Image 1: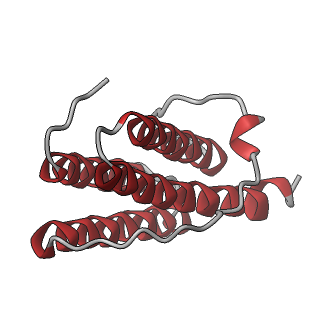
Image 2: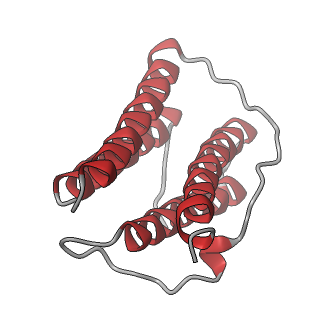
Length: 151
């Protein structure tokens, strides 16, 4: 498990994680079979850029607010077969990869929140976990709309 000594360490980690997600979705967009798929993945990349900007703003201003909220969980990622990224992935498989990626990020931030040495760090990890659960919900809704309803 990673060790963070400061809030800046956490924010740098979160910023890099968001950049990794941007790169991931841009790669999926570049390899998309159709213009519709490319557009969807480009939109996901733009959302991750927005999240990265929000975290950078927290780092620059030194202020963050933790919104205590429950995010719905459709649990779709609990029931799909794990898929590793591959060239020319189907939209369905790409959504599965994205759901699992966001689920893993959520779990990481939750564990870090539980192990944080201070309430401020714990709250920051919790805020990041909530953000990742929002991402996962977005992919689950997309999967429900474009995969489950079509089958």
